[in-house]
Length: 193
Image (cartoon, rainbow, N blue to C red; front, side, top):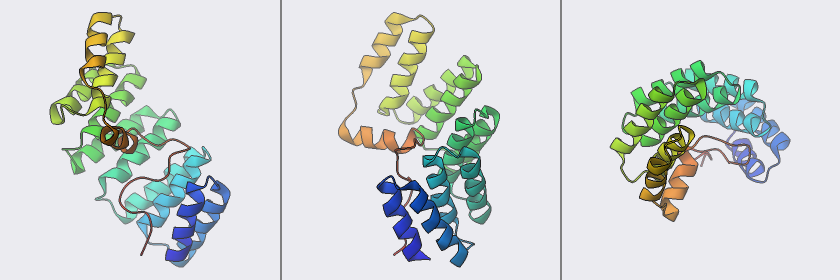
């Protein structure tokens, strides 16, 4: 199973999503109770923009290991991809319950509230991210974007210029800004040794 999982990661990194799906499915056929294999299969489905299948795999991964906060965060991203923002919000709230010190979760939750149409709640969540980590530049940027959207150009400019990201911050943002079809799976090591 480990060999198939590791092969799936390589395929996913190469953009060979169909091959990755097949490899992860083979790993699951051998070890069906491994949360990591299900989450990796979910990532492969996400890369093909098959969000409903990805949701199914992440829900299964959570059933197998319900204490892993990042699984709920990625599940929230999948729901957001389906425009199911109530479910995305619920998933991020659970991630925060499990890891309340992760600024990226609050930032992402804020965007889900904004996408749902509740700008004030979104702003509160993004501000919570800044309070947790004042150097977390994506939250400053998002507050600036929100201010610009609301027509507060002076405030938007000040917020956007407050923090310029370092390379390390850009990498951190890539981990917590939610998945994209070109983004390989995130979280703890995805390969089994």
